[in-house]
Amino acid sequence: MYDLIVIGGGPAGLTAAIYAIRKRLNVLMISRDLGGKTNYRLALPWIEEYQVIRGLETVARFRNELEYLDFARSMEKVEHIRRENSHFVVETKEGEDKSTRAIIIATGARQARLKVPGEEKYMMRGLCYSAISYAPLFIDRTTTVIGNADLALRSAAELALVARQVNLVGPPSYALESGLGKKLLNSEHVTIYQDYELVQVNGGKFAESVVIQSPNGELKEIPSDGAFIEMRLLPNSYMVEGLVNLDAQGRIIIDCQNRTSTPGIFAAGDVTNTTEQVLVAIGEGAKAALSAYEYLLPML
Image 1: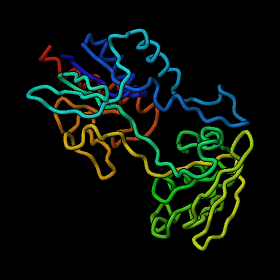
Image 2 (image 1 turned 120 degrees about the vertical axis):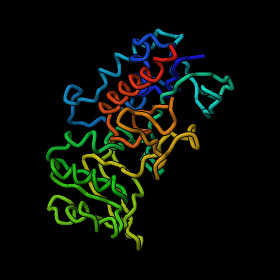
Image 3 (image 1 turned 180 degrees about the vertical axis):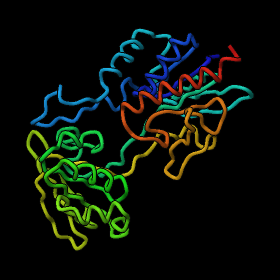
Image 4 (image 1 turned 90 degrees about the vertical axis):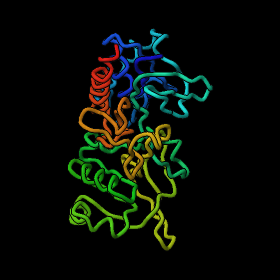
C-alpha cells in the first residue's frame, strides 16, 4: 500500500512526486514518459535557446532527481482508478493493480489535431499549439492562428499586442460577437478569415505559409512567420470519470488547494480547470503534494 500515487510525469507530476518524496511519503509516480510537454520546443529561425524561458531548467532538475529513484517511478499507462473502502486502486495497462491512500492526477491535456498535410511535418518547426506560451517571440512578426472558439480568440488577442500582423482563421460569426471578438474585429493588426478552414501547411526547413479554404471552396495561401493551431484541449481525465467532478470540457474541477470533489484525490496541471502554463503547472504540482501530505498526515 502506497501513501501516494502521482499519475503523470509532466511539470505538475514531476514536481508533486519530488515534493512528496521530500516529505518522506511512500510515493510512486506512474507515467509513460518524464517531462510531458516540456519535451517539445518550438524552433524558429530567428530565435536562440537563451531567449526563451520555458521552465525547462526547473522541470529537468526534478526529472534528473527522479530518474535514478527506480523505486519511485513506474513507466506505464493508467487505465482506471477505483475506490475500495478507505483507499484507491490504480489499474494499469499492464494489468498490475496498485493500492494507495491518496492520488494526485497530473496527466495533462492533449491538443485536438486537424490532421491536414504538413501539420505533423512542421510541428514545433514554426507550427505549434500554444500561442500563449510563445507570443513574446513574435514581436513585429506575421503570425496565423487557426481555431473556431475562445482559445483561438484569446491567442490572437495576445499575439496582436506584439506582432505586426495576425491572421485569425476559422471563427464563426457568433464567436466574434463576444467582447474579445469585437476587439479583434476592430484591431488594425488582425485580419479575420471567418469560417475558413486550414487545409495544408507549407514550408522548407520551417513552416512558412498555410493554405486555407473558404466555405465556398476558394483556396488562399497566407505567408506566416509562425502558425498556431488553437483548437480545444482534450484533458486526460478518462481514468477518473465518475469518480470526481469534471467541468463541461472534461477537466477535473479543483479548489484552491488542488482538492477534487473526492477526498484523497488531488489534481494539478493542464488536466484541471486552471491556466495551461508550464510554470503554473510546477506551482500547482507543489501545492497538490502539500495538500496530499496534509490529508495523509493523520494516517502516517
